[in-house]
Image 1: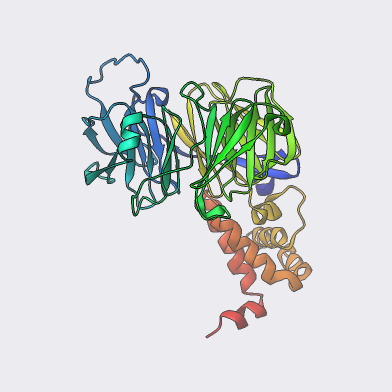
Image 2: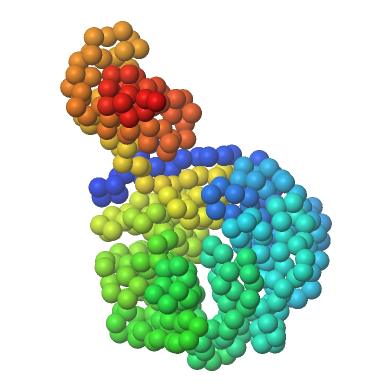
Length: 414
């Protein structure tokens, strides 16, 4: 029965299982994500919020003063500070690897905050040329940023540990020809070792690095690209096209498969969930599309922020923090309905042992040759488990199997 209840929480996308887990009920009060700029640190780190001054919002009982607030991932306030910097509108903010909050304003000034809300001196700049042209968009990656100016020029900070802004090659954009979308391939994933920027311009895509510009025409792409999301390993692109198609490509723009969405409006957010599926978020629906053209949809009645992680996506809303991930193979092998894997039989043997049933011995005899594999699978599944009780039971199953596994005793004996 335990296997049935666990597997009932999963959803099948072609031949892969996914699960969506609630990690926290958010502890903050009266927060509306749609009225704020939000930056979520990776690996379950802090969340920074500040009122979005590009939107007309009703202040309700709030102070007219804008406050930068930092919460932990459960929505507990860590600190807040009044935002009183010059330089124009806040264009974007993101967390660096060292938990420093990077904020970029319209004139290209870079303000930095530590996790206690203290401004880190000195303030830095994207350079004089960027200052004169005004920043209209910025795209962050793990430890760097690319800024796009009103004049269609690109400026980059490759590493926040050593902030040295540089200008990228001129993409040749006119003042009235700003791109539909901007995406970045991190330096560690490019052949040149430099950042590559992809701009959806007109009917095609322009690829820019420090030294050169490459144009990909719309005929080979199948039309204008409205949104681009790049996989975490830098190998694949998810492109939302003008006609509502989601096309997955490699970085050479060779199409691998496509999925026709019901809406031709580009999604508000698009993110990879691991390397197996892509999430698209519109106003009230979250759509997950897999490589087999299957899809799973989730309905929401509140705004969301998608936070890609190495093993899934965190989904932040006004009221909760969820985690959507592909179910790990070890977990599937144990809890999949009807599974007869060694790990599943070992987990079942523990249940029989607890009930003092002779079936426990029978299960152990069936998997004697595979006990080390079963023990390792139970340990691995426990490491991926969020439910403490289930995690404890998996570790008990591993310990129970280890007692009958002479090979493991030899490996770990002093």
